[in-house]
Length: 264
Ligand SMILES: [Zn+2]
Image 1 (tube, rainbow, N blue to C red):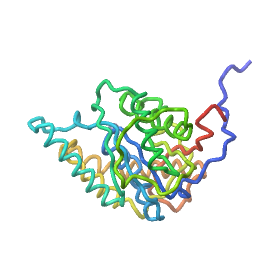
Image 2 (cartoon, rainbow, N blue to C red):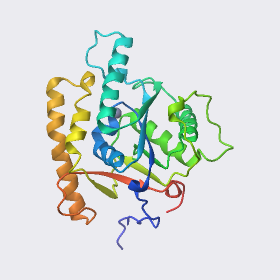
Image 3 (tube, rainbow, N blue to C red):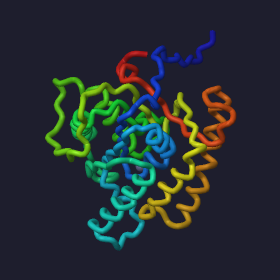
């Protein structure tokens, strides 16, 4: 008897992330989204979507210049993130300021994110895949988990948020449903995004993040990202999920909120 496990495909339809017009990208660190899916973000903005970011940690652990005061380091990080956001067309960044690589509570972050989602009213959420099967950085899987749980619980009014004072610029004019949740850094991608037209924009955004990379490692990353995008495009071609004439791609796992709660 063959005792190997069989992967059961999901019956839930894959929503179109590009149908989303108000997207909240939730990340652990200031550069996570742009490095993984900055091309997707640029493409969403080109398609007319409003995109905002929430960065869960204060990101201070990764600053390479240890002589900087916390205040100076924090202001440089924000400055770099704002320049990258401007390049991609991201409208704003909200910081939860949990300690980078520290002992913070996923439950508390989830409560904060529920408040953010309730006020921001996104129709699309982008987050780190908390189920990446080799992720060792707790900030990544905790942020991802807090994000997906906030996405499914924000409209359950019996679940408490927090009393965060979210700036007015983040507030929505109308209530909407989350149509798609896109998880990046995923082991199980189901969507491949053509980034041929926005690769240079993505690289320009990523190159702003100088506080956390030496010149050498930044140069290495800017060389590696196009190669990684070609590799993803190859997987997209082989799985018939991407047109063969696309050279550079990003990939993510896109689900409906229904698919994130027991349903398959
Ligand atoms: Zn990170």
